[in-house]
Amino acid sequence: MSELNPLPLEALHAELGGKMVPFAGYSMPVQYPMGVMAEHLHCRSEAGLFDVSHMGQVIVRGADAASALERLIPADVAGLGAGRQRYGVLMQPDGGVADDLMFANRSDHFYLVVNGACKYQDMEILKAGLSGCEVTLLDDRALLALQGPKAEAVLADLLPAVAQMRFMDSQIFDWMGAELWISRSGYTGEDGFEISVPEDRAEDLARALLAHPAVAPIGLGARDSLRLEAGMPLYGQDLTPDISPVVAGLGWSISKARRAGGPRAGGFPGAEPLLQELMDGPANIRMGLRPEGRAPMRAGVELYHSVDATAPIGRITSGGFGPSVGAPIAMGIVPAELAPGTTIYGEVRGKRLPVTLATLPFHTPRYKR
Image (cartoon, rainbow, N blue to C red):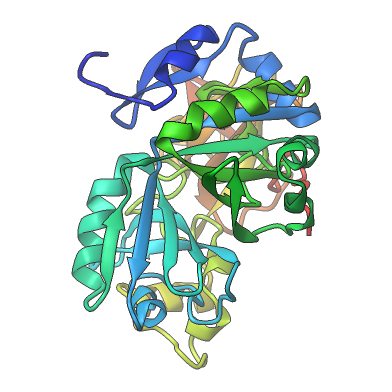
């Protein structure tokens, strides 16, 4: 653990009984005494507080920052209104996906949140690709996520105006002298908020939120099962340099303005093959999977048409137990012609076990529109 970066709230996690594990170069809580299953269900019914300060927070400034970002991201950056946030994928020169991210229009600049394991690589790509822009990776702010059906009521006790925010709004608030950057978004399939807070005020804010009876601390274990139930891809597993946004089921992130025939079609790395794949339809696609029985199938399990097929047709990219579903669930890359309800087989320890293809998500998101 001594070689890992500590989170700003390391002492608070210890006080709360967090079990720390290595993740993305940081020492992070995987669970608390409540346990992964209970934490998951608490977030679905109450509100959970996540420390996601390992994520990269980036500021992009420049007179033509929107157009510059569109050279790297196949989204409608220029059409994003002030105070709004959007999902995007950061493309590599070879057409692969370097990372997925959120970007917000803050009127005179853009605020990006990128994955913790990719943030230094992302900075190289951003600085090389955004000529004429100032690109800064912040090191003085923590990031918290408050998620669950009671998240609005909890945060509104501290900041009443957040109740007026819609899904994917991004606004700046003052809380007891601390400037909070708040978006109504998250990674659980529940309503909630992500809150950037000055590092030296992170513990004050965390304690204020945890003081509410509806709030419990939630670790990485439940964060993973929550996003899996919500059908959300994890970069490095369900979306990689070898799994395109179209194959990953993220074709919607390629805005109409950037597609063939759009006013700003292409112009980003890998545009030609990606837009062609979008028009033709991919040969393979990310789908939901429901293994039979109670044993989960994890990432890496190979999938077969039948119990005696010699060649795999795909593989599981994420898998585990879905506490809200009450059964094992998974996501995987399979031939696009296979329909939901089709039975295929996953090979676990030399045995072929039945898996039923399912539509995503397993848990219907409950965002405030």
